[in-house]
Image (cartoon, rainbow, N blue to C red; front, side, top):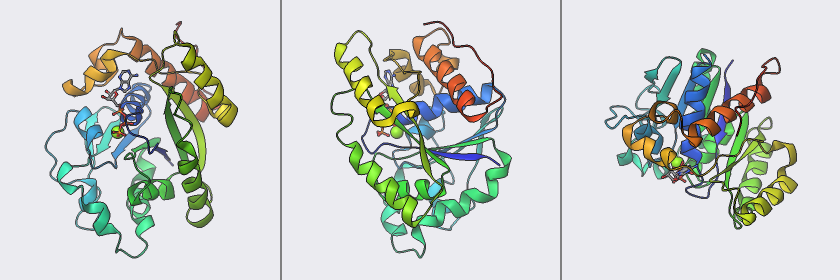
Amino acid sequence: MGRIIAISNHKGGVGKTTTVVNLAAGLASFNRKVLAVDLDPQANLTFSFGISKVETSVYDALKGNAPLPIIKVKENLDITPSSLDLAGAEMELNAEAGREYIFKELIEPVRDKYDYILVDCPPSLGLLTINAFTAADEIIIPIQAHFLAIKGLTKILEVISKVKRRLNPKVEITGVIITLYDRRKVLHRDVEETIKTYFQDKVYNTKIRENIALAEAPAQGQDIFQYQASSRGAEDYYNLTLEFLARHEPDFDYELVEK
Ligand SMILES: Nc1ncnc2c1ncn2[C@@H]1O[C@H](COP(=O)(O)OP(=O)(O)OP(=O)(O)O)[C@@H](O)[C@H]1O
Ligand SMILES: [Mg+2]
């Protein structure tokens, strides 16, 4: 049964979508069956996979007007797309009975078809994110290496603990990924230490460095391995994929690419 993993941080621009795109592509290249779900009305994940026109989006399904849409991106990798014109859907869902469970109800029936289901959350802690947390087995938080990064985290931790108490007792934060990292900056190393004090071994050893190719790839509708396999971004997301697999599959044996 596929593990459902919400990638979330209510702070914007910390690399959630970039992580879903490239971790999904990395896992698919290791022959794991992956579904990437775009639960963000910005639809950045959908665009990043080169999909610009969406007939049925995840919101049509959330509103009960369609089955969960699933589009094949490539071998082992499917996506459930979002679309821009449905940005108001979150409000509409507020009136639904059991509104926190709508996504769970949709995703459970397809779970068996995948090894990993990665859910890209919007930069908020609204109903869509709560739906992701309610369906999820795990939550992974990307954190930008920035001195204010820790400050806002209390809020997401509070929400996760409420979801655990009221909606989904099994959900856990299993990972924290440091993104947009530049090791030449002393500040970044300090921030890394602070993050580790908070989250200890949940923090991935692999840090995602700043790399322009990661910002360029989405415009081509490509993941980093297709766009520039020799880039630092590709190296980091390859290593992240290995570490993710080692953390999730105890038999998985690997060696990191040299940095
Ligand atoms: N390691 C990186 N190096 C350089 N640019 C990056 C890196 N990671 C992400 N970016 C760029 O930074 C911007 C924000 O990244 P991304 O969209 O992944 O963040 P997000 O957390 O999903 O944002 P939002 O909260 O708006 O959904 C994007 O333009 C992306 O291409
Ligand atoms: Mg995003």
